[in-house]
Amino acid sequence: MSTKEDAKKRTETLKRLRDEHRDTVEQTQELLKEQNTIRKQIRQAMVDGPKTVPEIAVATSLPGESVMWHIIAMKKYNLVAEVGMDGSYYQYQLVEAK
Image 1 (cartoon, rainbow, N blue to C red):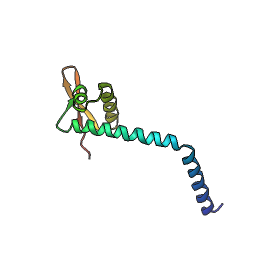
Image 2: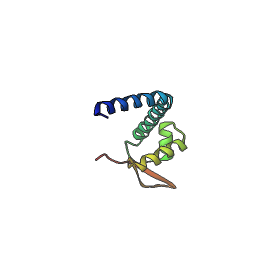
Image 3: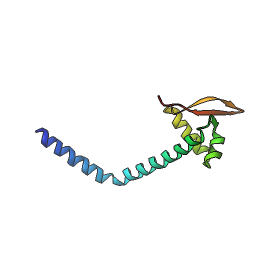
Image 4: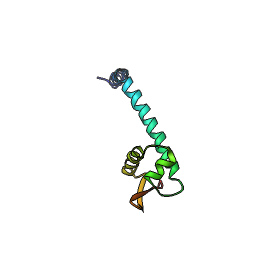
């Protein structure tokens, strides 16, 4: 098969897959958009220094369990770090981009 034929076949396959999975792709894109909005709110709440999960929850009006879920995900990707304790709560701070 020529390179042109391979490219055409790949293009047709990708188009077919996009059509078959359109709903899933749209749902995933919407979920990512929602998560990015929440993480932006969390980052804005943490701009002025370290915060605990309850402090972030109050500042963003989000449920504590939702804030915790996002903080854990952000920590996994080195976007926030634990920097100390405030009573029995960990404090989290934004990690500066390099």
